[in-house]
Length: 211
Image 1 (cartoon, rainbow, N blue to C red):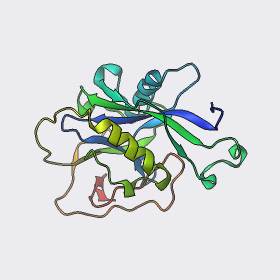
Image 2: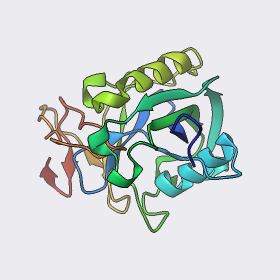
Image 3: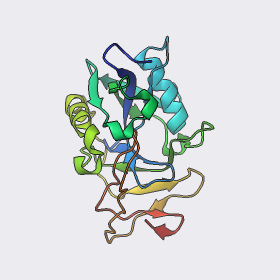
């Protein structure tokens, strides 16, 4: 479903924990990380699409979160031609997004990356609110900056101080603590349209090995 200008309606989700850290998901079978996002289906409102995508990608239900704020207007980004399928070139231009800021009211264990038959992520972590933009694929950086900046004034008062960073792989294993030493993550050389770059500067452990 495209608008007259060739942009597909979409929602983006910034999910906060009680320390105002954000959910950062690793795209399945890649080294690329991003916020949850997805298209708005015909007949859906942005809020309905957001709750559907939240469950499909993160496994959370409406009762698990509280809507803190949303962007007032659509935020748009264009997708470079080489990321667009050949049969869509000339028609599809990019995404226009409404971004939602959500507060997690449930627990980390309520999340399930395998809630749908087509999972988007195979691991996740909590990250500081201001994601380093160099870790985001270039054509999405302006939208991430706009969304984070517009919604930052609605951030709840954080509870407690950050003590550890975590990453959970496949949501069925235990919690894996990061080691004190920083291990640079491997960046993806190329990303598909919905992918972002891998966050650098922090070592992560997945299934017992450094990535």
